Each structure stands twice: as structure tokens, then as C-alpha cells.
Amino acid sequence: MEQASSTPTATTTNQPLVSVLMAALNHERFAEAAVRSVLDQEYERLELIAIDDASDDSTAEVLEQCAAEAPPGRMRVVRHDRRQGIAETRAHAFRLAGGELIGLLDTDDLWLPGKLGPQVALLGDEADVGLVHGEFEAFDNETGETIWWGSRAWDRDGDQLVELVHQNFIMCGSVLIRRSAIDLRGVGFIDPGYPGYDDYLLWLSIALDWRIAHEDRKVMRYRRHAANLSNVLVHTANPARARAGVLELFTTMFPEARDRAGNELHRTIARHLIRAAARERSRSNIRALQWTLSAFRQDPSAAFGAFTQTVGERFTR
Image 1 (cartoon, rainbow, N blue to C red):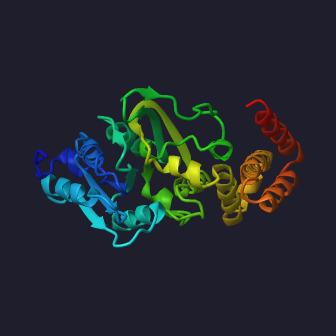
Image 2 (image 1 turned 45 degrees about the horizontal axis):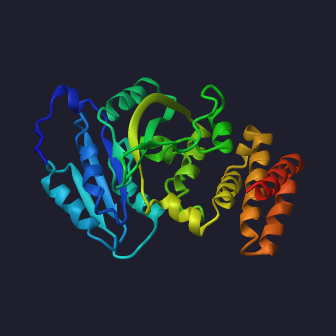
């Protein structure tokens, strides 16, 4: 990679340091492009901390080569000698980070040029904003074609905590976060018991105390391929149960969120539990029944509506 000048200027020395946390696992084909998309940002005070979570391929070697070609101090690579999971991998990178602003990017995704500058400026201008996120483009790795991915329908002007309870509309790789917003509630990156949901728990905790800002700008590209964590979870886990579980954990950790989220919290958990029960029937009728009963205790009306919908979907397939 082209060596950047290390001579500080009045402009760069006044910039806050941005630490980018990169969790890596078996992405040897994609890692270099992800790294370049970060290091090529037109923002000087930036460090990239990449943690390889005991990959089975040559991801770590690719990252180390990128670090060797980067300007001194610009990129650090650490290898785990055993698999620890994405939450602990991000937590490890966060412990090593020195920046007052924190970005996130996995090794199969890409930042778009100019992602950082406006987000840094927004956080500098608006002291009550703890997290800013932007729009993204999902694309098929094999064809390169843009594909639809997830609902972007939420109330931008509403209480973002309530909106997050309803759905996780924040794309992880699009964010820039104030470090103090991560530290305030002491959540950080923890495994909530469902792999890949550490970021959702963090967004919820930040929304308790800080304003969350959204940019209409497209700031990243989200690569879809067979080894995506979300693909693995769909086939091996129960995403609806995970979403309900994160919300249950969040409100156990922070009971004050129950009053603020109000009925939307109970309705959303009830809907998730009914969908989870429908999926779980092929594995355990007992668990499916337990989750169904829990859903009706949360909100009978929402549970009945979700139950009717899932039964209808089964008969219309």
C-alpha cells in the first residue's frame, strides 16, 4: 500500500483519533479489499485493529501483509490461538483501541470513499449524539449485483430506543461511535448468548442515554456470500428467539428501559416468541409450547396476531 506521510499538520493533530475494529474469520478472499477501504479513507488520524479469530484459512497472513505495507502505526493485527466468537473478537480489538471514536467493519465488507469525514464532523458538532450510522448497499459476491437487504422503514424522528426495540435498523459497518457512549453503561461488546447479536445489545444500551443520528448517505457495501454469519445463523439457530432474548436481557440489565419502551417492548417480544416457537416445533414441542405461553404473557393480542399469521403462512406455502 502507498505510504502516507507521517508528518502531523495543524489540521490532523486537531482531529480525534478513530479506531476501526475489524473482526476476521475465514475471509482470505475479502480481507485485503476490506482493509484498503479503511486505510484509503481521506482521514489521517486513523488506526485499524484487526483480530483474526483463529481462521482456518490464510486470513491472518493476508492481514499481516496489509499491515506490513501500511504506514507505521496505522494497522495492528492480532491472532487468536483458539476460536472465541465475534463478540469477544470485537471486545479484544476495543481493549487495544486508543481512539475516542470507534468504527466497525468486518473483513467481508467495504467502506465507501469519504465514509469517515462527515461522520467525525457530525459527532464533533453534536455533543449529544453517541452514534451515527448511514445507508448501505448490499451486493451479491458472485455477480456483483445490488440486492435488497432488510427493511429501512423506521421513524427517523421518533424515539430511537423504541424504534430499535421494534427492529435493528443499524448496519454495523456503517456506524461511527463515541467511545464514551460505549463506556457509559459498561456494555461494550459482550456475547448475549446469541452469536452475532452483540452489536444489537450495544445499540440499545447507547440509545438509553444518547441521541442516535442517521445519515442518508451511502457509506458502506455489505457483501452477501455463503459464509455470512447471518446465513449460518438462519440455518443453525433461531433468529426470532435471539431477538427476543436480546430484548429480554437488555431490559433485565436496564429495567428503566421497560417504561420508556412501553407496550412496544411487550408486543415485539411476543411476536418474536411466536415466530421462534413456530420454527422450534421441528426440534422441541416442549420449548415451542413454553415460548408460545411466554408470548401470550407478554402481550395476548400481539401473540394472537402473530400466531394467526404464522398458521396462515404454513397453509399458503
